[in-house]
Length: 204
Image (cartoon, rainbow, N blue to C red; front, side, top):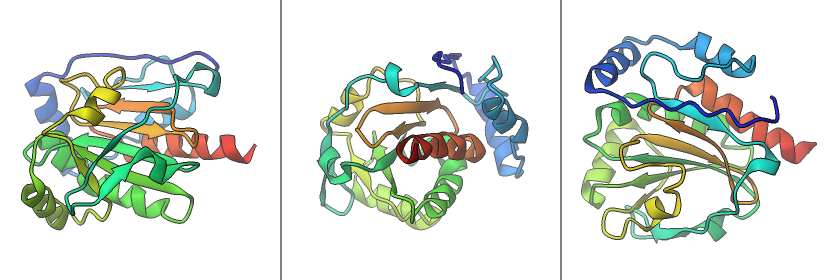
């Protein structure tokens, strides 16, 4: 990993999203995307699947505080995850690419369940019954903050998640700062690399 920030932005079109959804539903694995990430390739954009950014510890912004209510009615705050890594996914139930990535996100969640990594959704549109129905359909076990009324969590992370970038997935380090972001469908191999990088920082 180099010390420069890798920024790659490109707007997603409806056609691109359709292609991504078709490929993902067909079970296509973007192994070359993960290889690009690991090899520090200059290109982070693949097949209309959004963009990603990685921030080294010295380049990260200040920790972000947030609070909201989950679909189960529990209050969730950034303080709940103090000293642990958080993977935060912005989504809503009727979003096609959100549905494409849901099972992959849950699998990565399970892969890191015993390593101090917490997954947390931020639902930007739905009420509790819809969110709970989505969780049941896709086997999601981690909570989501329902952010539709206040948009406070989305506002807190607006520098990393612009309004049109749903889904987006953030990797938040143990200090509460954003270490990486994927805008668009999260490739599980790339997300895994990002999480491992942050975990290795703590071990160093």
